[in-house]
Length: 347
Ligand code: 2RA
Image (cartoon, rainbow, N blue to C red; front, side, top):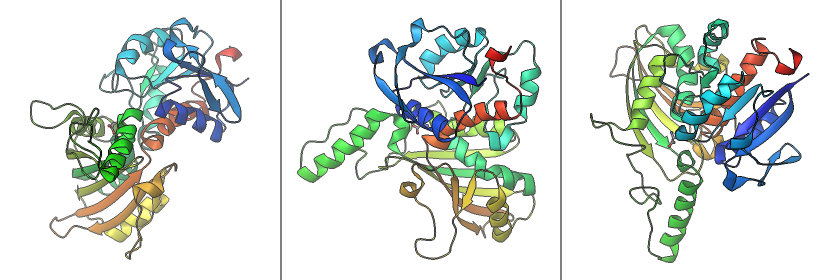
């Protein structure tokens, strides 16, 4: 028998990607259920060539569901994930609600899948696994193989994040503002604090006491939790007028020497990475080209002459896929492929 999978938040940007990715990758599901709030009851979403009607989360019985892929925001996850997990279903949550809880594994399969081997053995485990923030997921896919080779001491990350990270309303705001600029209509800001069309905004999520933003803090905290607590991380997160895919300029200081050629060879072999790095016009990836793709693309690999062991890289990935839906599905795949979770219907 195959698995039963529920997608919560199935009508949102990420929920729809989850349904597509489950189908595209042939996840071994006998049944996939689309769940949402009562507002979306009966709305139709596609799963492969099927159309599923959304059922209401509040009334759903999870007792025979193997995996619940949650993409419904932190508040809803705080209330529902523990209840769903208590039925024996494994919740893989895309919100920030559980990421920094020591009891909960935070997973990018290419980086720390081994954590799941120990986690499943714990008798008192909470059945929740957290998916990282989009900007951290792609960053660590690129950094992990380099860290294994030359040990990273410090990274300086500058992000260029697309508006889809802020949800559908943020995408609509970019569209409407762009149109308004062309037809000389008044510009309305509802989602962003400043105009996003033809502009960049150095502010994502709320401000912290030290002057950084929560988005920047997430990159620091999640890198330490998943890759290595010893790595020093500093980040500036910027919203740019791009619909899908986040880009990151990353300056890396290593403990040991690593040439640009060596880094390029390592990244060419690394899981999840695709190197596009010709030192010529257009020989690099941009967000538009990464949208709809699964890979984490790495370009502009070059030595930093101002550091003893320094490199600069440019990392681009689809934030709705590797940054959210794809990584969530890959976590479920890892549990299945390692034989760590069997269908409950087999018991
Ligand atoms: C953003 N990090 O891009 C968020 C989405 N998870 O706003």
